[in-house]
Image (cartoon, rainbow, N blue to C red):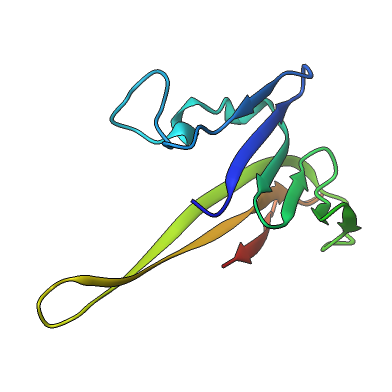
Length: 123
C-alpha cells in the first residue's frame, strides 16, 4: 500500500498499521479495527509524503507544514478515516488498474452542538 497509518494516543503510546493491513485481534479485519478511536490524539499517513490530522485542535499537517481548515470554536474532535478502492478490468475480466484513495480528517461539534466535518483526500 502506498500509505500506512500511525496513531498516537492521548497517553503517548503509538499504534502502527502493519504492511499486511491485518488486525492483530481479528485476522479477518483490517488493522484499523485495532485502533482505539476514542483515544486518538494524532493520526498520520506515511508514504511518499506525510499527512497528519491532530485531534487536539483539528489542524492538519502536510510534510510538517501545519494547515488549519476551520476558524470556529469546535469541541469533541473525532477521527474520520477510510479508503476508496477503484478497479478497472478489461473484457477478459483481468484487473488492469487498482487505485486507492485515502480519506481522513475529523468531525467535531460547534458551540450549538452542530456536527462539522473536514476531510482530506490523498491519491
